[in-house]
Length: 444
Image 1 (cartoon, helix red, strand yellow):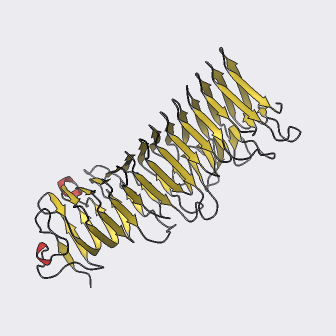
Image 2 (image 1 turned 90 degrees about the vertical axis):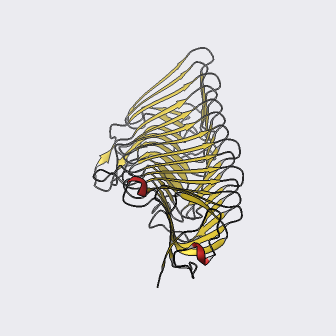
Image 3 (image 1 turned 60 degrees about the vertical axis):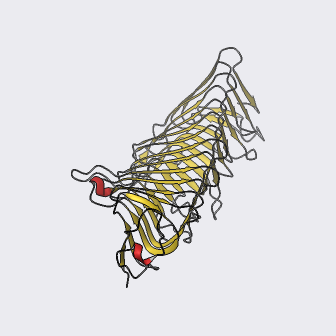
């Protein structure tokens, strides 16, 4: 039978010493519940295991160098009740480690203000097998209730060697009306995944809430195994900047990708943005990217040395049918500014275009509205021998200006042109200004 342990130790005391706990003669074991809420926080040392690790009541807690803790059920930061009771902070730093098979919740109740920091080579490692039925880690996952504000969760992974590794388990930033924020900086690393992107996603940024993910600084990387998305019904943003990297790799079914604005029956009508700038890299290996899908608007902005690499297909603005049977339009914006590059990296396709500006997954036009600009010195859209369709469905406008350039192609122009305009919709292409160029190698 699980026992309840309340931490009473002084700052720096050991988890494995019985006198630091309320029971006095026992230390926690697997399945026991441990609570850290007395005294406003402190430093915990040593090693040990429990079923639940829970930090709250406005305490600011940290793990001493070399500390190693494990949990089997939950790691919680912030508790129900709001006010000071609902807040909490934990720092895993200086070579300390927490490992667990259970769920990780950073702010999952109304009134929570919760913060998790992984720094100085600290590690948080989820060892559970891949779970497609729920996100293993949630950050900011509760709506307001009565006088209590929506939950707010913040995660910071910073410094070389600092690692958040969820394996083949998912990460949710902002869900159920809450707000979730994550920053990966100074060489920090985050890994999240799924075994099946058709059921669950490795990373959701704003599922039914507001989410923000920022990857910044050289050596910082977020790896998503499978297809991730930004926003159903909230306002959410992915920023990759200052030589940071967001990498999408295939799941066990071979699916990878990113959907920026992902409307469905769970939620739609939100706004999603992906911003790649100052040497940041967004790399989707062997997968596709959609910007603005089924009733949720999406925007992709690339500039100042930012690079977006897409393995197969880039679609900006695509409509489709949600599970209720309603066809929702896809509204998307693509902005490639000075020094920005968007390119396809896979082989040339002969049966479909590589880049669509305005499309429909249902095969029926649904008022798609797409605006794409490639503007400024060094701005480049390169399809790598694939075709470019402007206004396949809906209405699309493409403008190349101020020295920007587009290169499209066709592996077999008798099957598919390098440039298709207004095939089943309305499309407009304008090339203007000195140095601006659109090269269609294979006809239009």
